[in-house]
Image (cartoon, rainbow, N blue to C red; front, side, top):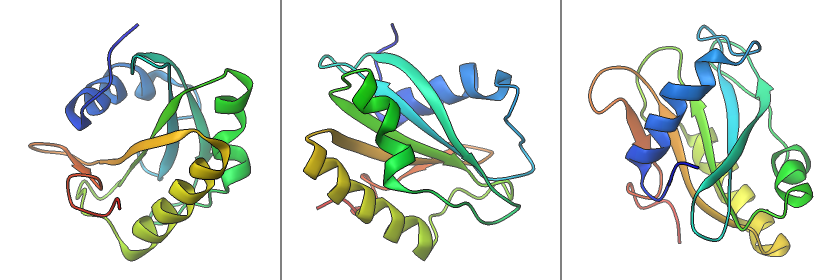
Length: 133
């Protein structure tokens, strides 16, 4: 199992595993949850939703469903921006805050929300950008 305790680790995991998912479409936003154990090792991932060119619909029920079933200690939220620019939108920030609160109620820690783009470094971490309280 791959350790995923940094945004770079999450981004590496994405590049190695998510594009091979049959439902992944790089032309649309795809929202993925990495399921982690207590040692921050990835137990697996779940593609929650595939959206449109610039929008995606996510709900805490679907985001945390597999985390609950698999007894996850923590999750990393991830999605791509088909534009290649990984800068978070206001909607990304709002959804992240809502999901952090939902995770707190469930006692499942949301470690980060990483947005995949292109180029270097190729991702943005909402935690590193200061959007986690």
